[in-house]
Length: 296
Length: 198
Image (tube, rainbow over all chains, first blue to last red; front, side, top):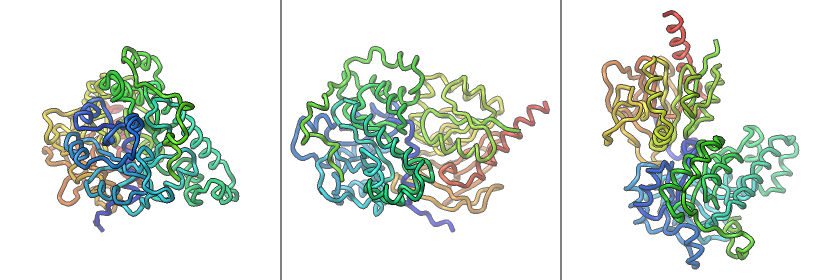
């Protein structure tokens, strides 16, 4: 048999495996995409505005103009990802039709559905989704997400929420691994998680898909911290192109992600970078402005 | 004899190769620096983003040590991005990376991610039904006479061997079929035996 099977779990999840140890950068045009690629990004996320500008602009944030994606896809050879609104089947199908390599069903955009996420298993293109805890992670995997990222709090340049979410997910994975199998169904009920996904975690000793960190990475040390805490890689949204020197920040964050435990190197990498993006203290953020609470 | 096989760990699917090496009875070593490279008898270049891996190689002066590793006759095995790193020529680029495999490769030659696929593949001397996973995969456009073709798919060359160098377009590490890693492990053992005989 030599029939080619596309869109299988192995092909979709495998694509994310290839991104491990790398940095995925938000870009808003071809020029930024080239800077990201030159700095060593493993992929770019093409969008109309970076999260901090989405915050500043207010209103409804939607899928970017396909023209932006086309220009970015034409400009770089690394994979191009794009964001669709939570539950917006048609935005996701449009992105798939364009041939983007990965879709982020993202809380950074204004949700299109406040009850249901996309049935991602129906698509050929793979999806990445955000999570704050293992229940949310497992529900997204159950729907067919091929990659996860902790949500953090996008566009704040404040790492605290990303740390909280990654620690929470990983602590819960460890708990599941050590649980008696008799206890898993009740745990699934408490978490609102598909039982089968928990069973897989128990058997494999880890999540069945790659989990990156996102939402608040602003410095090389932030990226290295997330790797130290067990992230498979890092998404950087506003942290690069809202810093004083995007080229330098991009390069430094890539290096820090690879060599996250080489502290002498991190000293050198962190020097003379200029001013990072201005951050936001999370407690100053009104509840309705928290993007991490979008998703169900 | 326990052979030491390194996995270049600048970026990419490292842990899968580590597991596969261990299943095949080798000692797996993570290689992030020139010093790490001196510890191993053979090296796997994993899948990932070749542009990223190359940039990190340059920043830590690893390109020359990697070329020397190859010219010393130590076995190297590149999967997907790793194949691109080994190749002497890359279609559309006026430069190569390690450039020791006498072959020309073309990047992303099966299309974008929506075109990524898995299939069963006949691999010479290894398998008649290898589960091959192609992800934004390159293919080998042409090879010189010292390169043996081990597998083709849809008339495209997808796996080759040139003496102590092995390269494939797909990702054996994403499956639980360890026959290709076992084959490479044998190559490493043979190279050690040859060295001991000299």
